[in-house]
View 1 (tube, rainbow, N blue to C red):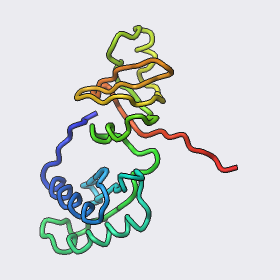
View 2 (cartoon, one colour; view 1 turned 60 degrees about the vertical axis):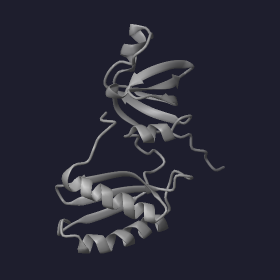
View 3 (cartoon, one colour; view 1 turned 135 degrees about the horizontal axis):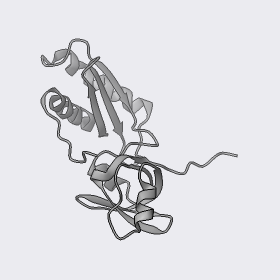
View 4 (cartoon, rainbow, N blue to C red; view 1 turned 180 degrees about the vertical axis):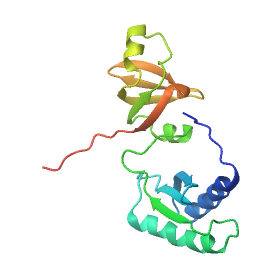
Length: 172
């Protein structure tokens, strides 16, 4: 997992513009993806207090971006803009996103064994499986999670994918 990814080129221009526009809409830019093939700009926005976004929030950002898309000379002619909430099962891609999820239930898929003093059998059994655990600590190079009462240290470099995994209540 590239936890410290930096944007370059046109992606950097999109990121800086999106960050400014989303902030002006009193929202947070959770994540941005630019798909060069097809010229699709995907913005994932949210209200930090709710960790979500309403459709009206997405429309507000879309409307605020449109004049810039039409005016900026560096914009691709056929740009498709998609604005949405990161969702209940939001991906965790940056250190900041992990930090906002401390104390929450998360799902991890590992491509390498956890660090720490766990048994080799336990470590091997975790690789490639979806782990549902509680995020307790975020450090520079790793996270600590509680997995069924056991604390595990997992290096970011060993995480293939991560997302929020809330317990959803059903209405009866």
